[in-house]
Image (tube, rainbow, N blue to C red; front, side, top):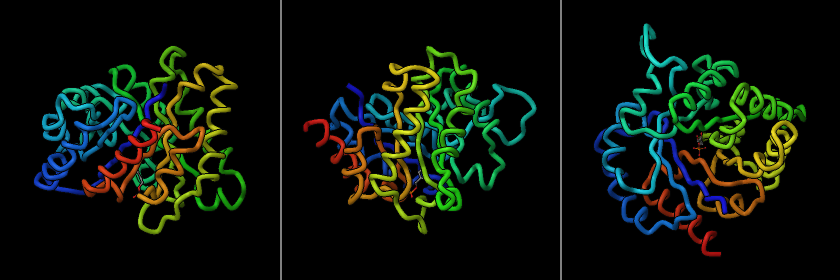
Length: 258
Ligand code: 13P
């Protein structure tokens, strides 16, 4: 039985104090969390050590919002996968649309980072998404599948299922985003799984974890999680308040209990 993944990236928000407060408020909810739910939190780099230490022994994975594709060397301003591990991270977000749009991330660098994460036994969480224009042109599936296939280039077949994919439509993310309907999200998730099945076989496709992100809130999380090909949610604003994140965990817990 696959777990239901419920995660948040804080993006470039919070300070040391509010990071600590979020963790203390979420802790009791983690202790009550079902084994069938996999929580994760992705703070900004400077708080990674602090957050992972505070959450040590808890069933929540802690991760980074980016990595360099090199392990060490003359790469000023970058953070290596080894450093993320050293700071207690076990998961790494790769290719969020904000990084693709504003910081020059490409499908090629996403692929290099996926390989770097796996080489260092970090779980890559690859974000893929379609733009508003691609949606209007009717090429959302083509665009998203292309991003997934390039991200997985040269990933050894026995390691494919370690890679998490988050479908995050660009038009759905953030303050001005419009959440995908459950039907829209399911359609793209199904297409991603189908594309993986065609290239890597049914067993791999079935085991791949596909998350949805983009204006997930307390009203739409449950119906999104009910979709056949949606294995979890990756949340921004709703989860930045500990109460919101705890409520999302409750929604997922209720699904496990049936
Ligand atoms: P929002 O949930 O705030 O739309 O952000 C989603 C996201 O980008 C998660 O990575």
